[in-house]
Image (cartoon, rainbow, N blue to C red; front, side):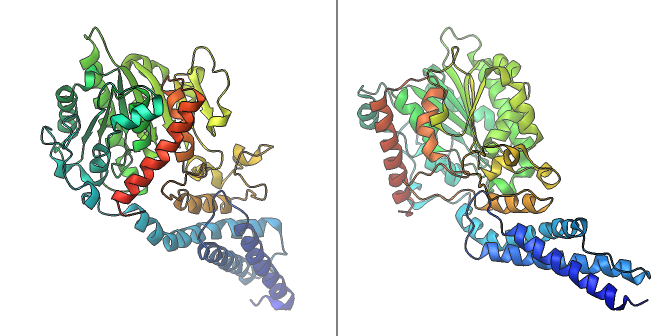
Length: 459
């Protein structure tokens, strides 16, 4: 049965309102800037989908012989929320080439600037190493090929370096199984004397094998070179394509920690044991010690720092598991002065406006606390509104553009934590640099990043 003029007019009104409402909501500010072509695409597709769904919904009602429903907030909301999913997927696909260009590069291919094995016997991939340089992959070669020089350590601290830092990296191609890769890492720590250093850092890499060098640089500087870091990879793909490897990665981390505990058990002098994970690496490391405080005690972990942990139930649960001895900050300026006594053993560095931290499925159906609080956190726009489905889709697209890295230009925004590490890592790892040392450390971190970018042909 036809709708009739009144029904048709009402139907058109609902469709137009649904499209306009979806467009308005999709155009609201989000956590990070998008490239100029992405937001209009997202808004247009969301509006079109909202209007299309409203057309189908009102048509189905009218064809059964009843007049199409009048304009209602519920109809507009349902159409707009459903449209957001399609809009996010299509806009995400539009953004993917740009993200891929930044994140890809061939996980196995070595950069020209890091293609030669390092001469330093204290690092993996050197002629003295048990690990072939060719198996380190792009990220491993970068990490082991850039140990902090003794003169840099002395410049920052004013004290001569005691030794050269140990850097152990075992790539996914360095051995066939998790067990073999972990045993190779342990053998490398024995070969390099890593277990005899004052500090031993276990860094959990991202999916591509990326292990942020800045915390390692900071530890080598603050410890006067008397430190070792160990990284065991579990893949070569970017983190957003490695979510299916979290279980494998967590098993790798757990086995590595198990073996380190065994090695340190009978030593009269043991290094201070530190753990660090960033982004997916943080989630992986937390998944390896789900007992929180109890697991930290069992492994003898002295200090833990996790940066930009992806949001979700597991993150909330882990925060609760270490609540009694943890500190969560948005930036170094929020570190309590003086520090609590005893100093927190577990530190979380999580930007209020980091979409990777804030994105989780529940945002699709209920307003998250970070959008409900007043005043809002840093870099959470006052004009950002919550709406079922649409806000979830916006934050999903935000995650694609959460990191905008320019060598040497540190920004404390989104998923970029480079500007925060110099002020956070020393304190989280138990050091207390004076203001002059902190200033020189920040300057050095920027200079080293620019130097690495030049070796990579990026600066």
